[in-house]
Image (tube, rainbow, N blue to C red):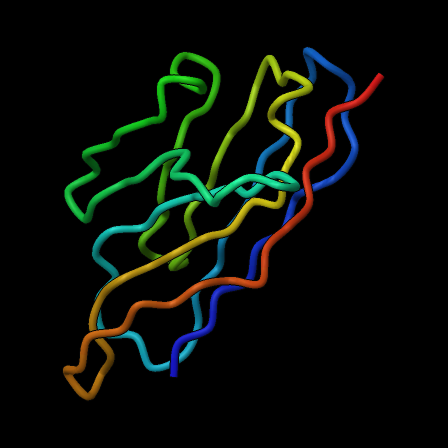
Length: 120
Protein backbone atom coordinates (compact mmCIF):
# COMPACT_ATOMS: atom_id res chain seq x y z
CA UNK A 1 0.00 0.00 0.00
CA UNK A 2 1.12 3.53 -0.78
CA UNK A 3 -0.10 6.57 1.11
CA UNK A 4 0.20 10.21 0.15
CA UNK A 5 -0.14 13.00 2.69
CA UNK A 6 -0.40 16.63 1.62
CA UNK A 7 0.41 19.51 3.93
CA UNK A 8 1.13 23.20 3.80
CA UNK A 9 -2.26 24.56 2.86
CA UNK A 10 -3.86 27.50 4.61
CA UNK A 11 -5.18 31.01 4.34
CA UNK A 12 -3.08 33.57 2.51
CA UNK A 13 -3.64 37.07 1.15
CA UNK A 14 -3.52 37.78 -2.57
CA UNK A 15 0.08 38.10 -3.69
CA UNK A 16 1.27 35.81 -0.93
CA UNK A 17 3.06 32.48 -1.08
CA UNK A 18 2.61 28.95 0.19
CA UNK A 19 4.56 25.76 -0.19
CA UNK A 20 2.66 22.51 -0.36
CA UNK A 21 4.26 19.17 0.40
CA UNK A 22 3.23 15.69 -0.68
CA UNK A 23 4.92 12.92 1.27
CA UNK A 24 4.66 9.35 0.06
CA UNK A 25 5.05 6.34 2.31
CA UNK A 26 4.52 2.61 2.17
CA UNK A 27 5.90 -0.17 0.06
CA UNK A 28 7.43 2.05 -2.57
CA UNK A 29 10.03 0.86 -5.01
CA UNK A 30 9.90 3.74 -7.44
CA UNK A 31 7.87 6.90 -7.91
CA UNK A 32 7.48 8.02 -11.50
CA UNK A 33 5.17 10.91 -12.34
CA UNK A 34 3.73 13.08 -9.60
CA UNK A 35 1.06 15.66 -10.18
CA UNK A 36 -0.61 18.38 -8.19
CA UNK A 37 -4.28 18.88 -8.97
CA UNK A 38 -6.84 21.26 -7.57
CA UNK A 39 -10.59 21.41 -7.33
CA UNK A 40 -12.50 24.57 -6.60
CA UNK A 41 -16.15 24.49 -5.45
CA UNK A 42 -18.44 23.71 -8.33
CA UNK A 43 -15.57 23.02 -10.70
CA UNK A 44 -13.87 19.91 -12.02
CA UNK A 45 -10.52 18.77 -10.73
CA UNK A 46 -7.72 20.15 -12.89
CA UNK A 47 -4.03 19.46 -13.29
CA UNK A 48 -1.88 22.25 -11.89
CA UNK A 49 1.64 20.87 -12.31
CA UNK A 50 3.38 17.59 -12.99
CA UNK A 51 6.92 16.33 -12.58
CA UNK A 52 8.36 13.18 -14.09
CA UNK A 53 11.00 10.86 -12.71
CA UNK A 54 13.46 12.68 -14.95
CA UNK A 55 12.47 16.03 -13.45
CA UNK A 56 10.64 17.20 -16.54
CA UNK A 57 7.84 19.54 -15.53
CA UNK A 58 4.72 20.97 -17.04
CA UNK A 59 2.23 23.49 -15.72
CA UNK A 60 -1.26 24.71 -16.34
CA UNK A 61 -1.21 27.99 -18.22
CA UNK A 62 -2.94 29.68 -15.31
CA UNK A 63 -0.02 29.03 -12.94
CA UNK A 64 3.01 29.28 -15.25
CA UNK A 65 5.60 31.62 -13.84
CA UNK A 66 3.99 31.58 -10.39
CA UNK A 67 4.13 27.94 -9.28
CA UNK A 68 7.13 25.61 -9.17
CA UNK A 69 6.99 21.87 -8.69
CA UNK A 70 10.02 19.98 -7.39
CA UNK A 71 10.83 16.64 -5.84
CA UNK A 72 13.15 15.18 -3.23
CA UNK A 73 13.53 11.53 -4.13
CA UNK A 74 15.43 10.69 -0.96
CA UNK A 75 12.43 11.83 1.06
CA UNK A 76 9.76 10.59 -1.38
CA UNK A 77 8.35 14.09 -1.24
CA UNK A 78 7.13 16.47 -3.91
CA UNK A 79 6.65 20.18 -3.33
CA UNK A 80 4.56 22.86 -4.94
CA UNK A 81 5.88 26.35 -4.33
CA UNK A 82 3.10 28.81 -5.01
CA UNK A 83 3.81 32.52 -5.33
CA UNK A 84 1.83 35.58 -6.37
CA UNK A 85 -1.31 33.80 -5.31
CA UNK A 86 -4.62 34.97 -6.71
CA UNK A 87 -8.17 34.66 -5.48
CA UNK A 88 -8.82 32.11 -8.21
CA UNK A 89 -6.14 29.80 -6.83
CA UNK A 90 -8.48 28.99 -3.96
CA UNK A 91 -9.18 25.26 -4.05
CA UNK A 92 -8.47 21.94 -2.46
CA UNK A 93 -5.09 20.77 -3.74
CA UNK A 94 -4.48 17.07 -4.26
CA UNK A 95 -1.35 15.11 -4.93
CA UNK A 96 -1.26 12.12 -7.26
CA UNK A 97 1.66 9.75 -7.64
CA UNK A 98 2.27 6.81 -9.94
CA UNK A 99 5.00 4.24 -9.71
CA UNK A 100 5.83 0.75 -8.55
CA UNK A 101 5.64 -0.99 -5.19
CA UNK A 102 8.27 -3.28 -3.78
CA UNK A 103 6.12 -6.15 -5.07
CA UNK A 104 6.70 -4.72 -8.55
CA UNK A 105 3.11 -3.69 -8.94
CA UNK A 106 1.97 -0.39 -10.37
CA UNK A 107 0.34 2.06 -8.02
CA UNK A 108 -1.70 5.19 -8.67
CA UNK A 109 -2.31 6.95 -5.38
CA UNK A 110 -4.09 10.11 -4.29
CA UNK A 111 -3.75 12.14 -1.15
CA UNK A 112 -6.62 13.44 0.93
CA UNK A 113 -6.16 17.04 -0.18
CA UNK A 114 -5.17 20.28 1.50
CA UNK A 115 -7.20 23.47 1.41
CA UNK A 116 -5.68 26.63 -0.01
CA UNK A 117 -7.70 29.79 0.49
CA UNK A 118 -6.61 33.09 -1.01
CA UNK A 119 -8.54 35.95 0.51
CA UNK A 120 -8.04 39.50 1.65
